[in-house]
Image 1 (tube, rainbow, N blue to C red):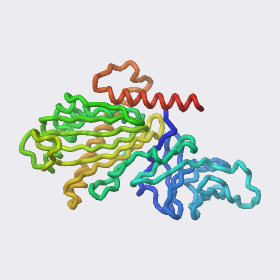
Image 2: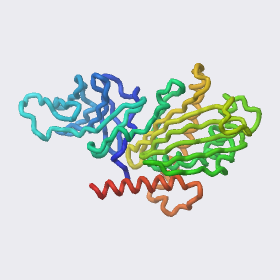
Image 3: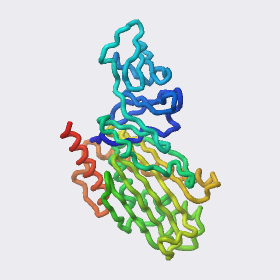
Image 4: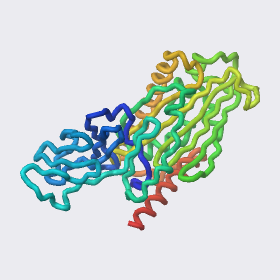
Length: 340
């Protein structure tokens, strides 16, 4: 079940180099991504219309790509403009093109109806390029359905257990209920954990004399984009008193490769110690360890679900956000299917 009329993250900017051809499977389709001479990204179906040879095995020629099986040349719109040894080009000599936009270091792709591709619907990932924050980009693959990953991101109670020794540090996260609010094309989730202990990495970078308050505020948008500001400060101080606080941010995106494989784009940014690259590296290494903890759990969950579903699973109060998000995706999928 994939919603198509929305923007998916296809790649980090550094993955698609000038004069290179980059392939990635998205929503069960192999997609070729490359850059025109001016740097603008191009996305085409990775299949020549002649004998279905992968265009990613071809050759970039200016703003065009040539299939290196029989030499057909396609422009950035997917239209064939040259066939060796043949002057007449059949009207059907076209490969599908997808709207593609680069914004704040992510290359976005629209897999649905091109006429509906509205760039104003691209989430605002300002933190990816804001000079007042530092971060290092990350990527990993999951052998799991993307909705299992969005479930994980919508219920942070798992931090107390999956990430007991990394991002969690206390069961108080699980015992603190989050507030959930519907917003346009997604949800807004807020969780404030009072009078708790700092996580191991927070003790490393902060100067906390005792108990702390922690907060996680994020928007989670279709198809699976998390935009979060979080932090930790000494307990007992007013919420707006941030002296000595560690301010953190995160942009994460889940893009389905297939029904059982997913791409996961992430970063962990910080608004403190901006001139110390060792802090950026340490935070990146730390979230990589934690996200690998998530991956092991979710991939095991996927294996356990083979031949089954979550339809008859027990529902908990903490499931509120993830169940609302699944209903939103289901409604959008149903709307697209009926209109098609």
